[in-house]
Each structure stands twice: as C-alpha cells, then as structure tokens.
Length: 268
Image (tube, rainbow, N blue to C red; front, top):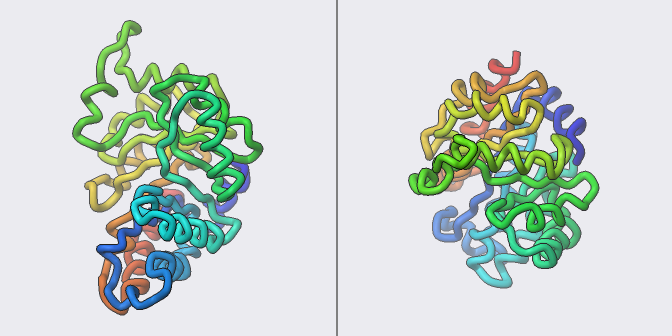
C-alpha cells in the first residue's frame, strides 16, 4: 500500500486506528479452543467486527511464533484474511546484517505479503536498507518506545548533544523517505512528538500503547498530527480483550468504535 492509499483510507473512514492482534492463546475466550485453529478464529471474528472502524492491523509475531508451526499457520491465515484496503504491520522488530535482513524482508513482504514491518535500527543502515528495496512496502523503525527501559539507551545524550533517539531519526530518515518509512513512538511519550515532528514533519508515526499502557489520544493528536494526519495509533489489549465471553467480538467493536469516534472528532 502506498502513502496516498493510506491517507485515503484515513479520510474516508475518519479514523487513524490500528488494531493490534496480539492474540494470546491463553487469553482468548475458552469456547474458541474447540476450533481447529483457535487463534485464527479469534482474529477472524475481531477483524469482522472492527474492519470498518480501523485503517490498519498490527500483528505482533511473537504471539504466533511462540506456538511453533501452528502459530505460523495462524499468522499466515490471518494476514490473508485481512481485506486488501487495510494496512498491515508485521510487528517483528527484525534487524540484522544485510543478507539476513534481505531474507527477513522476503519472508514478510513476499511470503506473507505484509505492507510493513517494524525494524530495529541498532545495527545501522545496511541492516535496514534491504527492507526498503520493495515497492509499496514500508519500514517502521523503532525510535522512542514506551517501556521503562527505553531510557537506558534512547535518552542518552549523544555527541551531537541530542537524545540518541533524535539522532536515530535524523540519520535514518535519509535512508528512505516519507513514502516508505515510518517511526515508532510510544503513546506514553506523546509530549516528545512535538520535537520529533520537527525532524520528520511528513512521515507517518506509529503510536502503540493507547489504552492498556496509558496513552492519551488527545495528546498524541495535539503533538503528533500533521496536515495529512500522519498517525497510526495502535490499541491492542483494550480492544481485543474487552470481553472473554461469547460476546468478545461485539465488545471489541464497542471499544474500537469509542476510539474511532474520538478520532473522528480530532480529524474534523
């Protein structure tokens, strides 16, 4: 999916919601365990209930890889089930030497046909550029995350007298463009989005952590939105685990709708 298509979806849906399918076999409703593929059945019903309210789905691959071969099958079936007009994110956090990154890129962009993948930039440009060689595919680089340990490295003052994450953004933004690169900024770091926007005014920013991690949507929009919206705000647990009963899909829709309506107000 190219940038224009993504912006179009945001405009027609009045939403910049990304639903995180961090589907944990130990947390899905018990009645689904009788299905041949419980994880896929859970995802399928969540997608059916929310696909008109969001513009993207983010699949954290760890929740599938942990189930071995069956988990990979669930992941493949899920990505194939998501409608083509929705942006898909492989939250895989890959990043390795160039030829290994090339294989990772083929895995997620060719074998699975994701639109994007999260990448760790720690190993530098040659570990990221192989992902940028695919047409209409996106790299989403980790920049400033929400976890407690993020300050251990991301906020270190560099030789340029910047927090390290700012140097990561400034340097890496030259590897690609706003047409094929996004950045991850955690929802609890919303106030930092103002400074980040000075570095990347036209790039999309993926903001995970809305809901369960305490992110505030109004602050995210206030500091991070640009003239094209420029935001994908992800909510996972607070949507998909709204209920663990027979009504789980309806409850997920209600939670997603609440966020979508708030987004609609912020876009107007």
